[in-house]
Amino acid sequence: GDSVTQMEGPVTLSEEAFLTINCTYTATGYPSLFWYVQYPGEGLQLLLKATKADDKGSNKGFEATYRKETTSFHLEKGSVQVSDSAVYFCALFDSGSARQLTFGSGTQLTVLP
Amino acid sequence: DGGITQSPKYLFRKEGQNVTLSCEQNLNHDAMYWYRQDPGQGLRLIYYSQIVNDFQKGDIAEGYSVSREKKESFPLTVTSAQKNPTAFYLCASSISTESNQPQHFGDGTRLSIL
Image (cartoon, rainbow over all chains, first blue to last red; front, side, top):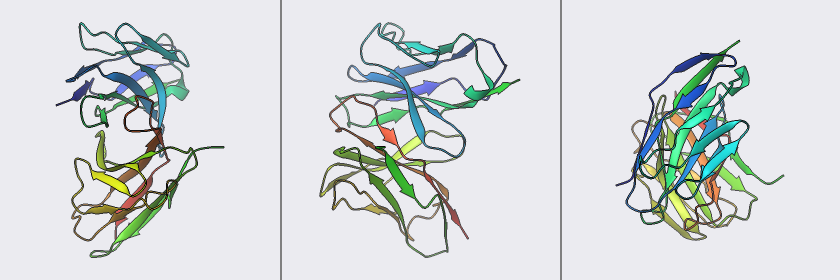
């Protein structure tokens, strides 16, 4: 079945540091990949997505590239801010499976001033 | 503004009691979902609905029930059969379950046992 494996947290960085959160996946078909962000006490918000190999999703300074050869979708940001502190979830949608999103376990990011 | 509204934000349940969590969307989406989130874990799918008057079990449906009588509404009942109901519950919707368009989430309901 489908699965998503995320880098274990928590991750603590200083403001303006470089961020990488690793995400790898297994899927039976050709999935679409997503990163969601969850701020404390809130639901999930879509951060970015990529629907096919070599696509790069980007939003608010965050980027992730769909790498089919390594089955990865790592999230990166060149310079994090305190306001980026949140939980980040990698997810995949595989139209060949049960038509539902499969989520990773989430990575808590804390950015210190 | 279009979006998903979950209520209440906090809910307390006594042992042996059923409680119902509300989820309403005005995005005109066909598909709706309920997830459970436990601390430090990802989201697990409880139920989903592709269209009005239809719903399917997800990975952890035992102890839960849903209805989909209107396109806009997908309430979740946590029954007394759910032995460990304390969690954060998230409702989501999407254009359809066939689409790779993203799901939109509500702000969640936190359920606790008294």
